[in-house]
Length: 328
Image (cartoon, rainbow, N blue to C red):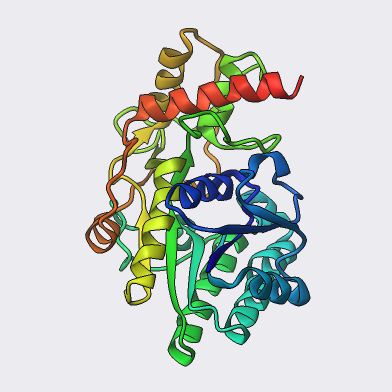
């Protein structure tokens, strides 16, 4: 049996492939390489270059590799772009997910793990956020992900397939061994952008708003190390294969850091200051978004290994230096 990882050449997917291989799984990747990189896929994993919305390709890969489980990362993830181009997101994140799920049902794939997002909560009324919080996505990105969660729930009721939808909070860091990391050009993630600024690749970094009701006036977010997130997917796979019921779970640490605290950590790790400019608030940014991770810890026995801001930043910073050398 094999695990099909869609989007396995991307940031989170490539880390998941590493963790699955570590766990002894046979892994096959489908990725169109539009935002991912073939060099990010470990040699032990098979790569099929193509679109997850291509039914013939998916049928062939499932049959050829005896796939019994799918971990679905492929999709579009930039919130502002989703507002500007919603049809792209409903195509890539919803319609293609529907096609993939349909082929899994037709091929009798038993388990499906979905890369969801805390964006399904929108502007949470309370923090930490539990899975029972109201679902009020504020962007086509969040709505496109929530629609796929709904599809999986309905399909699992109608067919012999179980699923796990993992709702990510703020993913950061890189592989501790430096094999892969966040490599997308012009990425907007705070820690990546700050590391690039510390390295002189960006002239300055902006802080959007300093008048939020938080201790230092800047937004607070729950940052999860990408390798801990990858391990959560491997744990979810074992749970489903062991007969576990379908699951929706937050992926975060349960504590947050402000933008200013993150920038301070980058300065500590880099050993240098960099220019920080104050900018107005961005529309729709909640003051604080922190996960309640009790469910994933209790149900999967998930124990994070890298729950430390400076560790997350140090791995991200090391990757940015390595990536800069690679891109010369």
